[in-house]
Length: 88
Image 1 (cartoon, one colour):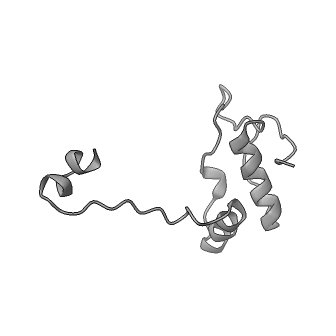
Image 2 (cartoon, one colour; image 1 turned 90 degrees about the vertical axis):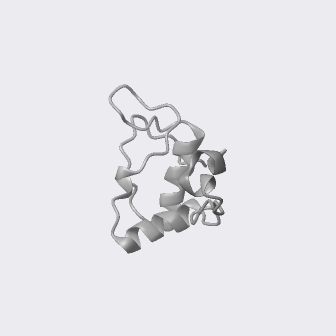
């Protein structure tokens, strides 16, 4: 589908999806964001955000995110509506 819907695909060029975070754990990603000086609080993971755009803190994605920051030893900048158990 991407080959049909992109200029590269229409012109017969190879289409490649880059996924640099695929082999990294959530803790690795948190550490890399910190190393690069990125505001990880600006990224999004939640499957069920609140009406005021906070992470729910309870879905699997929020729990994995919180656990990743904890495993990395980095303060979690995420604005959670309810902080679950961090996936424990």
